[in-house]
Image 1: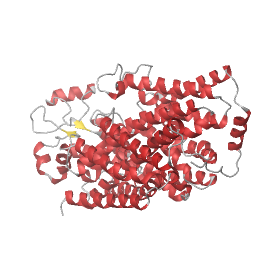
Image 2: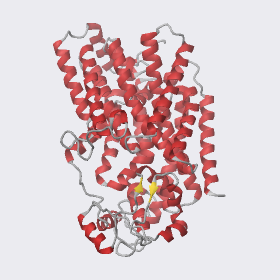
Image 3: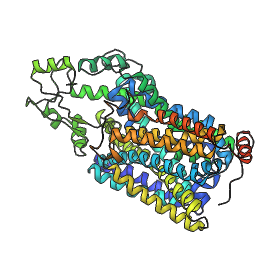
Image 4: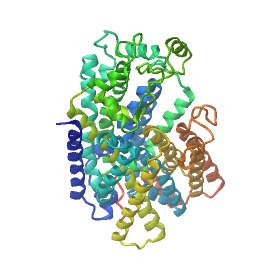
Length: 593
């Protein structure tokens, strides 16, 4: 059976499962659409949360960014994991105790202001839409490769699949679909990693194999990798080369952005009790750890495999020949990925070989001149393809490649569904029912939610055709927006006496400043070539657009406290409400909608 047929079998079987679950768990009420009837077990919710969380950025893109940068991109792991600790300790149980359906509803009630609720809706939609762009980018990459079609066609097909199961199932359908997707994606991520770890180190546990010895050379794996990348003019893999201040801000932005993401917070509204919200966060961390402990090994081992394929006889010998790439089955993956437009090479000097090295390094430029090289000839290696291509690079069996196809799509689609649900809930429940038409029927509210979700899919698909970066980088921008706008409002709503005017002013200031800073670096509304700065040469010192969310959060807090001090204090009943939310007793009854 050829590889294309295997891919179709794995992807088709997984999609049939997801859509079948969505039909079985179809939401019949607003309670089931928004909060799955508040009857989800903490372990089930933890698994669904992990799938919701481990998006295309985690599954497809993160290991690729680590592979080609090394230690400096470990910030993705530290920030995203640390954010869950904040979420479990500071937000999840209190928000569940409040007994509402959406984040915007909590902000509107806590700050006794429909304006605050509307500003929260805007913040939520901006952050979530930016996040969905990253997911749709991953969907396009995965579908493009495994259906052997263009990236654009893959993205359009993926949008149709998301529409099919997210629009009809709501939170109830999405929850149980995400449990199935977690099982698929974690198997798809860890099984190839186990094979590759055994090949390179003899250790079946990738996280331990990363610190083991390289079987072929007898050297420590990381030392071997450091040696090879240095010889090709790249930065040492295990050393810190970036700006420490920006690295700290980026990690902080990811942490507080995690704790402020609406589609993740919504998951904690689905459990029966407050204690279950904490347990859900704990179980989610366990399930997430299985992938996050494996990701650094995947990145390092893939980088070593790729480098050795490009220099099969060592970096002091000749590079791989064009003839070998065309004829040797070990290199078939390159021709397959070339069709997607995400991998490319060019024999610039006409010597029949493809030299892969850092042509910006001064020492390598001297070596290149002596050898007649005319620049790096691996001209395009999109970071988002690394995990999906990894089993092919390592020459693993066809069924493993098919499994990874299903896993990559599961990761991208599960998070896309959660984000779209958050957007549709904000529009239908907070905007339409909360403000425009409070008397709308339950059937009408469900219809408006589904229409809003369909519209969000169309916008995200359009923007996904020209994303502002790799999947993980685009997602990092969304985390910055959530960090600057939603997280401070939630924290102040639970632990302070900030009033409505302060909260509104803070959210507007945090969102506006962060969004402008991002647009200045990534282009206005992410339109290419409309930017004034780049992350290589940022506006403020060394602060990149992906790191600015932490600064935006500080601005939010500062503005909110300042305005609150200058205006009337919160009413006594709101002060009593805040105190009751913080008292560790049973969850408040859900409000009948």
